[in-house]
Image 1 (cartoon, protein in one colour):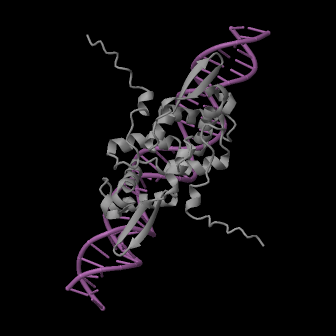
Image 2 (cartoon, each protein chain N blue to C red; image 1 turned 135 degrees about the horizontal axis):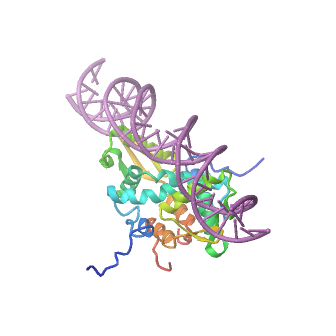
Image 3 (spheres, rainbow over the protein chains, first blue to last red; image 1 turned 90 degrees about the horizontal axis):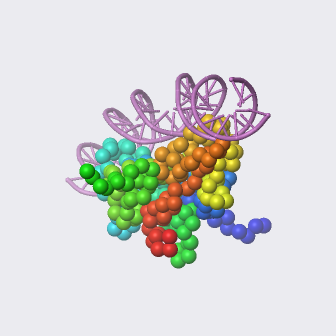
Length: 122
Length: 122
DNA sequence: AGCTTGTTTCGACATCTGTCGATGTCTTGC
DNA sequence: GCAAGACATCGACAGATGTCGAAACAAGCT
């Protein structure tokens, strides 16, 4: 009868308990696989523009219509947002007509940790 | 008769003067292109293992023979190291029989800056 | 010179990825 | 109910990417 709540390994799991700092020791295959997913998601110019657009938008969220002006078609925007979501970097919520995306809070801290920056004040 | 040495915009240029923090404002197309190159280079599990192997190796450098045990053929290792070098993340130097790779010093600071971590004590 | 070891380059190949237009789904307003 | 707008999904396609074996290149040894 395990009392632990198991903490639902859903979206946030993709990013949160990742790996030690890059400079600490060689990553195992699994660690590399996990961390690479994150970097890969940001490794496309369009996705990076979408991510920064969401991250810098007032209120910490933006609807697709607010950020669609990145030079590619609307289906392509949707495709990239899906990728970012699958990577655990963004989350989305429909409110009425529009769909809002926001940065998954743990992400920036996790990446900072990965680079060896102390999560001190986090 | 230009006196300025032009500072050779080669390897280090690929990383150093990149972009504002991800959360500050939407990236321009150029900024996104530049920053994405960096993330993309780390967006492969094999490259991430190679990078962490170099970064964590004693003396801050490692010869190819030290880090080749990542489950792919030796030409593939060489291919990935080349990619990391082209992205400005690693530099290499031949010393006798062996070729040594080391982490380009500015990289980690640049990435930290990108994530909004102050380069204070850097 | 020739052999051995460490590393890179070359071709070739299968797979993944980014992109689009067309179409589908959901919500609102008439 | 139906038309319109906001997003997502589908199918197709060109181009990029990861991988390998074979071969080339470099340095040290005998």
